[in-house]
Amino acid sequence: MSSSSSSSLPFITLNDGRSIPAIAYGLGTANYGKPSSELVEMAINEAGYRHIDCAQMYENSESVGQAWTSTGLKREELVLTTKLSGSDPRAGLEAELRLLRTNYVDLWLIHTPKVKIGYGKAWSLMEDVLKEGKTRSIGVSNYMIDEMTEMLETAKVTPAANQIEFHPYCYPYLESLVRLCHERGITIECYGPLSPITKGKGGPLDPVLQKIAGQTGLNEGQVLLKWAKQVSRGVIVTTSTKADRLKEHLAALQAPELTSEQVDEITQAGRTSPQRFFKGVLLQPEQKPAEKKSPSTKSKGLPLGSTLMLVALFLLLLPLAMASPAMLFGRDGLGYADPADNGGKLLTVSVSGAVSDSHGADHIRHFHPSRSPKIPGLRVSVNP
Image 1 (cartoon, one colour):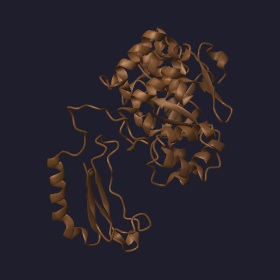
Image 2 (cartoon, rainbow, N blue to C red):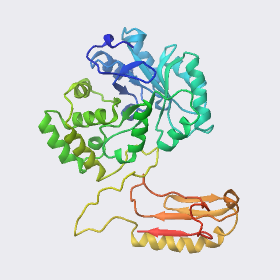
Image 3 (cartoon, rainbow, N blue to C red):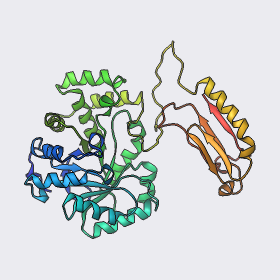
Image 4 (cartoon, rainbow, N blue to C red):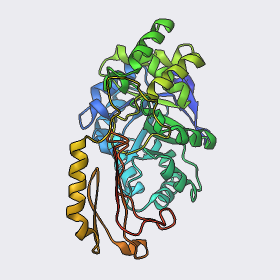
């Protein structure tokens, strides 16, 4: 797509040389599962957007096809991104092409790393689809550092983009991933950039955003969008049912840069309360959150009653845990595992209250002799 088709839009160049608008109208969130043709027309005709972000999972691609074909735009004047659900990139893309009323998309993403055929195989099939010309570029979505690293080990084509939840509160989960993407030229597409004020109002970011809004003449949402754009160096995916709001979002990207001090102040405020608002991927912060000092409150952890219940449950299930398959439990529920998977060794579970939010909660972990050689059997460790 040529930037001349919409001169007011900021553009970004992908690692395959293709240029796309650095802001997209998203069909998830508020539009999820709803016919959205009128809103897409509004985004294109009234707000001037030329990048539409779709997904099979959103179940509204047909209305996108209806909308863009009614605007009078030529196909090359619009960027269409959509995402795969399932494990068959070719069949999924062909279904989307029919709904979107086009013979190609600009960016085809694997929506989640939870694909049954594995990261490497799924990406290999994406590379095959790319060769067939039905998508201009390929990428992924919701891939974290481990999934991305494993996939890149066998990739012949580096993903053009990785679309992830991105805002100051979740940035502590993402710093290694962001570095990797920047090193490999993988464009970060940011969804949920306004979550701190649309889903997390009342947090430590509020006064910081208010102060910087006063300094810059932007509103708080625009400050968040500027922060996301400058830190990610990528694409902003946003949405609204109001054309004026979409124009505000676009204006934010065209506004002068935040200072490095302002960016850092926002980043540090987000670190004091690491959290995610889209819970499809469970993560732990890469850095220990800054402690909130208060003489009248205790650090958060497992309540005493919950700790005692876990210990009682452990004693009750211990005989079962010595059998095969073993029955194990952690903060997030019950699970089964076969000791044979670990060379005949029993398993160990860590039950931790150190991270109280659901995103950082420890899950059932397999016993690994090289990592825990002194553990002869099942053990539950409670760390309130």
